[in-house]
Length: 194
Image (tube, rainbow, N blue to C red; front, side):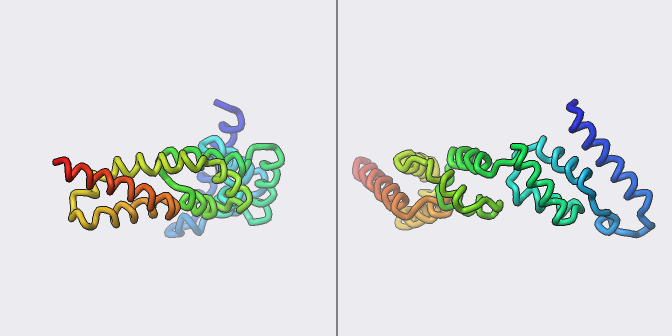
């Protein structure tokens, strides 16, 4: 096991044991949290970063939630960023790549990254890397997979339901209109052939 990770686990166990010993009977667990000093906050941050990537804002919020004062959390986050352990641009690129592969459009990706505290310029750069024709192809493939489920209802509502589904997934209205027109044209042709 990595020394930093082992130290973080040991510090967490020690802090938990100290809180349990200091807590009076009936005192809530939330109330028994003591403030983390910079060293403990750094260990908590190292522990969190071993599990998954974090944005600067998310990590700062988590450290504050764990009991670090805001100034300490900001200092730890700034230090980790300077050392290269935190990179919002790399996080945004990875997020956009993985979520767009799962069928989410640019609008939804922007909203999710904004909610995670990523700067607008970083979001624009990450989402701007999506190829427009690839976006159309992804939306079309997603709609084709979803169409059998949507088409179970009344046929006059299929286009509306498909449109709403793609808009919820974060695709631009222009892309949605093109996909819905193309798929309804295919569906009408299939009905005529039957």
